[in-house]
Image (cartoon, rainbow, N blue to C red; front, side):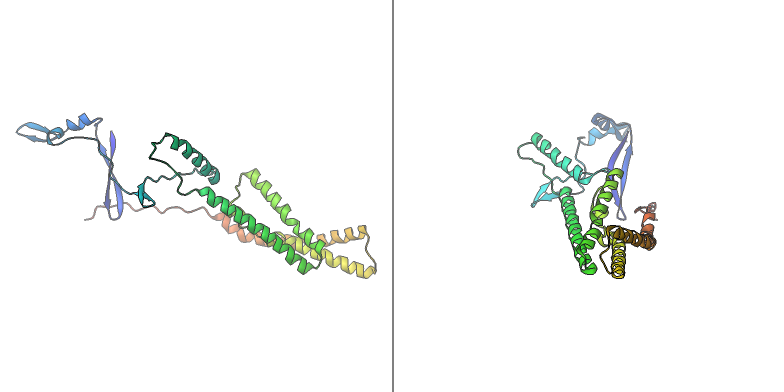
Length: 263
């Protein structure tokens, strides 16, 4: 069988030692011949006692100044960290029921708290950003209805984004939601609404009367048609900025050079 025999440290690296033998029990080790004296084999049991010992200690953990056993739960690729952390916490409750009275297991670091705090921060930033954009739109456009129409793009965009993320299985996290630019979302809507206001004001000044509903509809449609090409062109330029990010393949460890026996 192949048995692990700890490791040997050389040049700041640990090299695992493997023993290839046919030893399957303590008795096999005791009967192993280590030397011969006057034709008489000397076995391991003749020079010492063979017992099962503990592994070499490579580290230690502490809690509140006292020694403790620390374990780490590894999450599979593609899993939801908050769901996994919740399941682990529930499992610890069952494990504690089977432990001795003086031994207990408790989470030292629960990742779900960080995830919940991150989501709350993202939600707060999105709400504050949307309100700030509405205020800025009202101050610049000078029309509360135009500002509300432009700001309506924000919840509509978020609804479409959430629908697409749910359909594709993309989780909401700091990377997928925290990088949203509210100003970028309403950029195209601001251009179209501002152009519509300009055309409506010029038409009303030219007619010297209030415009009818059909006239307002016609001017609004013409204003949108005028700005479709520059708006799409501007959005494409912004998208092209993020195209290089799609070429990233992730971090890969550099292969280590083979160790050589020093001469």
